[in-house]
Amino acid sequence: MAAAISACAGQPRDSELAKRCHDGLEVAYQELDFAKANGFGGTVDWTKAASLLSAASIQQEFNKYPNCVDKVRRARYYIAQSKI
Image 1 (cartoon, one colour):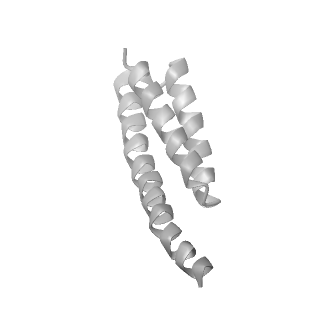
Image 2 (cartoon, rainbow, N blue to C red):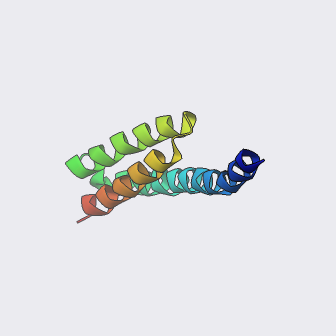
């Protein structure tokens, strides 16, 4: 009985992380495309961001949501840096 209760308690966190991963990827890819359209596509930071987003997408496929969220956060940082 306790195992069933603890399993239920863990579910919302996973779905919350899954949503953060999914939504973060959407926003980050939009930002990446915007940066590329504005001439920042060849920068080292832009390339790092693109690689991190690709890796985050793979993490999402394997339900590794904390890793996905972390990679998205780091990618968005590099996208912002590519514009400086």
